[in-house]
Image 1 (cartoon, one colour):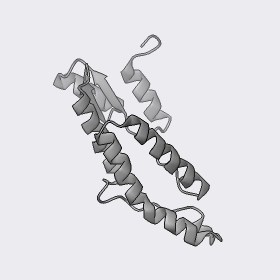
Image 2: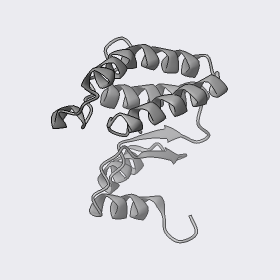
Image 3: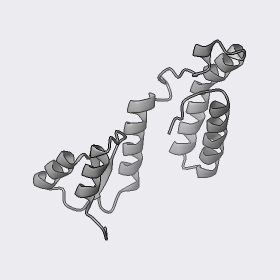
Image 4: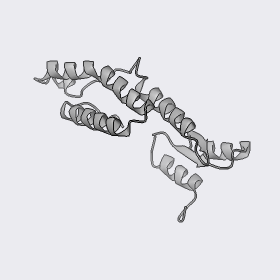
Length: 137
């Protein structure tokens, strides 16, 4: 990186309160370097050049930890439900359909159907935003 190295960048992100997952790409998988990555704030790493299957597995691992897997998604609640919003039933219906949407999204991901994945994610994000759901990604 022209301005700073990855270790410094990760450290600054963590110091500023960034709590999302950070994955490093590295060609040095020595124990010393891996320890340095972890100490800098990295959550995990991939070897350079990244293998597509390893990359996909890493995405599934970290997305599943945060959001649950397609078979057992974590509950998602609308911020509007807590306010006694007049659209409670509509919101509950939307939320009840999220596991099905997640299965469709995961299937598109596994099949590398990037157009279907983008379409479903965009549609889900828009519907969720309109109904007070937290931003997923």
